[in-house]
Length: 599
Ligand code: GLU
Image 1 (cartoon, rainbow, N blue to C red):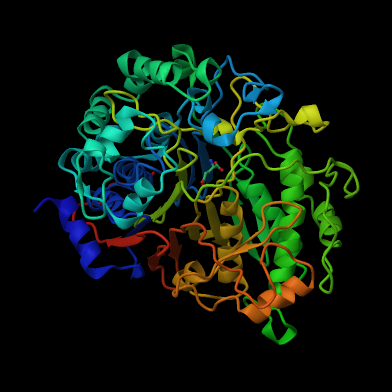
Image 2 (spheres, helix red, strand yellow; image 1 turned 120 degrees about the vertical axis):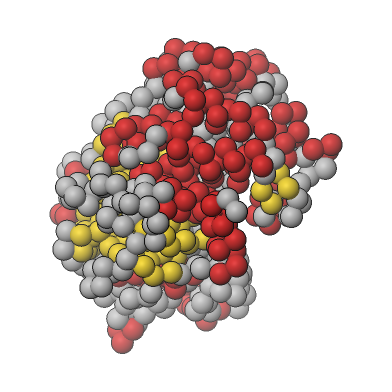
């Protein structure tokens, strides 16, 4: 039996959401993607090789969330040197982009129209990002890591309930363009759970990249097909919705290798994503503010899910998201005051506004340069919607190298545009920019569109360290709620001392703007302990909003999908855990081949 099938069966039969091993462990939101990573580890590959294979496999089995038509952030920790790097393959605006390109008749274009037009398509970065990581630290070729994905696309796989649900509730995105409909709604009938999906065009595309290398994506017929698709796809916006990407934009695209952001929390070190993501900065700001409260101390009212704990979390989220809205963007294009935002004195001044007995008025962004909190502009109203998609996967190999990757095509189904003849979806990442330039409202416009700029992201792949050694890798999808899913899991691990699976299963709470509308989870039975109605009433009484009427259960959301691996420093064992909010799968690998040296 083929090895990927063997792994798939092992995974489905034993459903190992939690596994322990001194060997390699992979964790992904789909069993076949985990199987692809496991196969590469089994064949002697390292964490970077396995991450590459999972990325490509996810394009096949979870195509609505990520793929070669999108972008990603990969955090890599190298065991031998102790170094950590970020590979930033975020999509970029084309050279012809302009600050007002999403403005029509003096108003921001409606998100559903803007995000399904060619205009929303950023120059895809995934292929160059994976290639960059493999060249620097991998031991396998691009072709090796594409092999499992090619087999999955060519031979097919069974549609799971999550893919079926996303086709059924697609906001029209799989129906707008005939190439997309032909894959996911053959003969006009939406694929259902259990259907078999073969993607021959995608297999051909992946094989082309495997044979000719990453340049085959950025030059030649495939590049021309991308440019044509985003220029000529019909959209509700007519001419105004025409994409501006050219062949030069594709040829010029380079992934960036960056230093991670580094912060500390109660003796743990956290390495996260720097700009263009707000993920690392905003999580580190919130942790910095929360460090002054005894979270986890139930005797003082700060146990998991208590009103006091949730209240201070909400307040920290409101403060950090006020800063995020004003200060964070792509700092290759605009200055982001990263040091100021993480300055201990500045964070203290922000945290001093949090009172345990009352809710603060809507906070404004602070002034990190002046280290006080009275300056800054008011937050602008949100003009886009959240989507629960994107994907996170994590891997540790037997040498202790770790990769933590969050990857996306932005909204569920991205732009909905499938490149004709090539079978993959294009992102709508450019609608992560301010659709209406914020400078028009007197804001500094850190996230306004400009040529070659990357849109601000919320993606927050994380690595947690103790005594200089990596102990956990995790991250989540979920738009701006990503930041809070990652915060919740971090607090669960460090303050509430939960085992990894419980830290992932526990219900999450999220606030993504200064006004403070609370979203919280509680639908699924595995999310325990719940945020009870009494707890919600206590929050309502303090003035927190978004939870509905007193006496009702306002925690009805589902957010994120966290895939994680941990390294037990005491035993050296590697474990993994995955999220039941999707079909999360963990696979442990005892390699049968002679190990090659790590990177
Ligand atoms: N495009 C979003 C970002 O980069 C991620 C989308 C999502 O998770 O739904 O922040």
